[in-house]
View (cartoon, helix red, strand yellow):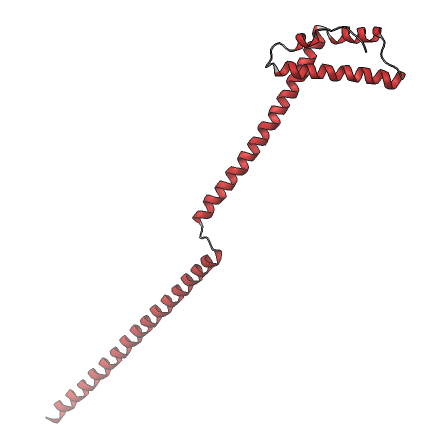
Length: 168
């Protein structure tokens, strides 16, 4: 495809740092390669000068140039969106790791030690209940036996006193 310089680069790229324009120019070049490849595959020959002029005329209209830039903007936005999404996912993973680390610091480091602590608490509660029960039982039974002893002693004293009174 022999042709004159067509200034398409200047129409699409407005400055050295015009990333959208550079991508648009790449889209234009891809379109041009597809055009040439299609003619070679379908017609088994190189494109004619007339075909090249037709392609150039169709691809350099204001609407087509706008279409190239629009496609470039879409590609760029998708790429930025994908990169941002990936960064956000990485940030979320890092936050999750930090939260887990902070939560782990609040929980006993060894679950076995934690289980032993719970078991020790249960055993000590049971021992306290048993000892308290023993003291209660001793208190109740000692009060009862003391009451029984006093009652018996009073009956004996009354019996002795009444016997003494009868004797006189």
